[in-house]
Image (cartoon, rainbow, N blue to C red):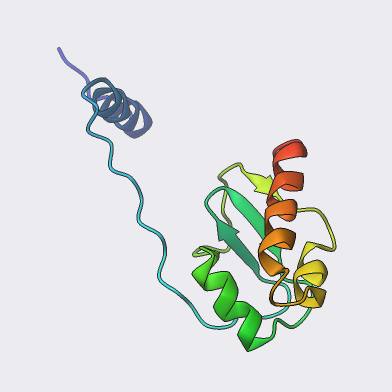
Length: 116
């Protein structure tokens, strides 16, 4: 007599078949959200940044154009990289013409840190 697999086993098999048949679908970027409040987290790919102070509208527009989005869920269990403390302040203080360099430096520092 065949027994039904527990639901976690069913999903594991589905996951295995999708991997073997290469039918994975890349996730789309979350839609652009409102200006993030203090205490929120924003993401860019696998890199996260905590919002520790109010973000000026002009900087948020620049971050959105650079690929940053509000974290779509409160409890995100995915592992990723976190930018060092003070990264947001560095971007706020950076001259708009120097912001790309500061952003690149911050992303490099995040890659050098151990993942969460």
